[in-house]
Length: 82
Image (spheres, rainbow, N blue to C red):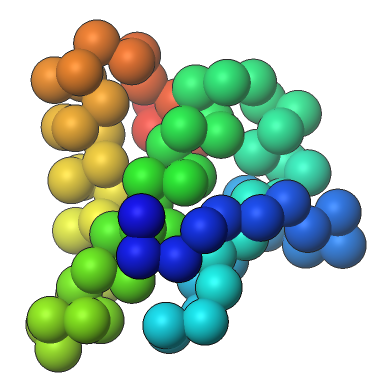
């Protein structure tokens, strides 16, 4: 992990990444179960890694990569990805 993810109960989104500083998981992600938490952590980590590589990216690209990774690893698909 580039940045250790933490839980933020005040976060109104599923997750949030701040370039090189933090990755957070919010209550919406926790409420939707394990699959959503895994998806959120992977999603925010993708932001960090692409920022480290100075690569432009959009949310759709990250969602596609995260979905493919969880399917490949047999982790299932998060409710937000269905």
